[in-house]
Structures are given as C-alpha cells and as structure tokens.
Length: 311
Image (cartoon, rainbow, N blue to C red; front, top):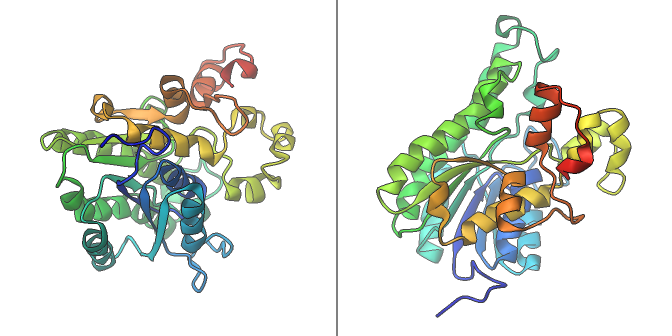
C-alpha cells in the first residue's frame, strides 16, 4: 500500500538520541510530522535535570510535540554513555515496534565545556572539560550506533544520521580549539566509515549539520534574544544574519528519511542549506539560509558578498 504523501514516514520508527532541545528536538518533531513513531531520548526529564541545567526543556516535552505534529512521540530517559541503558532502550524499541528505520545521533550537551578564551593552545585548557566533551559528543554516538545498528540493519533502507557542527569542507579548517575540533569532526568520519559498512546491507549513513543554529540556548544565553526578535543580535554578531531556526535542520533530516533514493548520499557530509536546495523545503520564515556557503565566501575567503544572497 502506497503511503500518503503528507505522511511519507507512516509506519516507520525513528530514534532521535539527544532530543531534549535544539536540533534534536526539531528533528524529532519533523520526523513526527512526516508520520513516524519517534523515540526521543536524553537526560533531562520533568523530574531530573542534566548537567546542561535547562529544566524547561525535557524529553517528555519533545515527545508531546512529536505527537502534536502528527506522529507518535515516546520519551525514554537515557544516558547514552551507559551501554546498558542504551541496550535496554533498543530492546524496548524492538519489543514495541519490531523495527528501527532511522537513527539520529544528536547527543551533545557540551556548550558549558567550552574553555575560553577559545583560541588558547590545548595544553593550557582544562583537560577534564576537554575529555568530557569528547565523551559527550563522540563516545555517546559510538555506543548508540553499536547498540542500535543491529536493529536498524534488519531491513534494507535504514538510515543513520550523524548530527554535527560543520561540513567536511568547513571542518577541514581548524576549529580553533582541539577538543571541539575533534568532537565535531568525528561524526563526519563516523558517517563516512559506517556508510561503507552499512552499504553492504542496503542501508546508509550521512552526517548533517545545521548552519548558524538559533537554538533556544543560543538565543537566550549567547545573545539574550528570542526567536521573535533574533535579528536584534545581528549588531553583536553580523554572521547571525544568515542564521536558521532548528526547524530547518529538522526538515532536512525528514526529507532524507523520506527519500527512497537516500543511498545516493551515503557517506556524505551534508548541510541543511544544501539539502534545502535539493528537496525544496524552507525555514519557518520561507527563506533558505545557506550559512556555510556564506561563512566560506565572506569569513574565510574575504569576498564582498551580500548576506541576502545566502537567504
């Protein structure tokens, strides 16, 4: 039976690991809007707050948004550094759904581990913070893939999405802080390497990055603005003019998950702006921001460009 075009992921099951806020929450909601059953995980619940410390953003809240969007949201508290918890999560998905079609590794939570000034050499930075960043942004992804891919690969067509910050092109440049550089380049290599392995069983892996993301944390803590008046922050950071809402990368991942020809992207590093041009979706304001192209042309290459051309 052919699926309805407005619910291309009906009957599919997704796991968004790290779906409490920001890109992860938006990806979960977009998958739900496409009709998927979405298991959303994280450490912040309505009764327990993670080290990130943002109590208002919970996995239960994300699950409710998924359901309101048209899917089925299932919140499962999970510490993805604990293999036993991740195995129990995957066993539950298998027991309740019998399948896993999309795995999104968006686990992060390392903003508070940034050691400033950002450009200090590695040997002058806090080692414990750096190692914790690697554990949160790399080890969690490895554990989750190791536990969940046996279920995902049961059926051809499964998709693994590694969410990171930056494309392979932009991350070929040093990100100014070694621990952050390693943490954000690793998912690109994971998607590349696992793409080689998954292709042999008819599945695919990609890495996906948003551009300059207007996450809740970025808006509130970095700039003191809201989604309604975010443009007020451009005076402080001109590149913010080409920023994007979390919904944009959510739509990017949903488009990939619904694409029967997604294998053509296998192993690739992709951005929300790039995928918007291919799949035809827009951000919530109707624009198509392409932050990484703007950063390349304006910041890295010093070209005289108009930011409006990148929206």
